[in-house]
Image 1 (tube, rainbow, N blue to C red):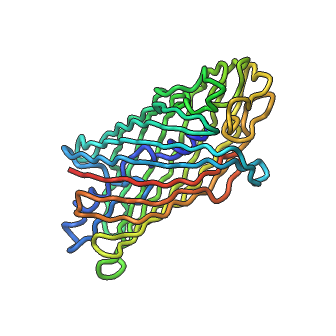
Image 2: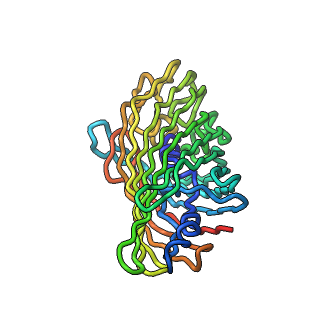
Image 3: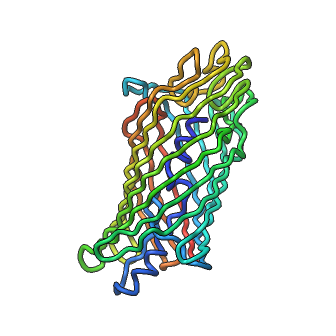
Length: 335
């Protein structure tokens, strides 16, 4: 299940809404015929939602995990693991400088002839506007997220190959800074830029039996997830007022994790990914990790209130992390 941790909460943008409509409302007072944007696919807006407004953007991810990147950056193929992820984030403006977020997620997993659905961990967060955008100064937002362990992560059926797992058993505190700048190019063509710097801090996890981090029926102990640093550069370029291209470049890194207790006879039994990468057979721990991924997309907007974005998200290189290819689609509504 560490594969889902990396995929779902690896960066603050995955548990955030992409409320570019907020920027449009603010900047449209200064710019005539401003293009409409929905994305990019991953990076969130650096603007808080105005007081009394709501932004809703349901997501569907179809992801195939094909293997892992080893400690020497080489790839290792593993049985294909399919995940359908349904995310329903709702972001509401509280004041002119603060908004809040609630984001539940559900999974339907399939691997080696087994399938199951699971509830994931739930994210609740707040965002604070530190700086408004001007001609020479970017917009800056500070975000705090807490992901609660509402999904199942242990006492798994080894015959299900982890398809019934949905959570990580840890409280995840995310602290993120989001920078945004709207840059005119020519005519209707604008470049919207976002930079996200996010730090994820996890609590220790008690594991027993077959669990999301590997293990077998004899496993019993405590897993200590590492602090994770995520950098996401998000770009959008308007083709017309309604059409735009988008691209996210995501880099994630973390030091090694720790495990104390009894790992079991074979920590990888029952898990097609071991503990998400290549675990130490004696400790269930994972070495230092890094991953680079890209998410190109195209978007269409009916108005500044309605839009749809669709694209791909895939890994390019990594170390002690899973490799995946994902198709993503989201519909954005702002009121």
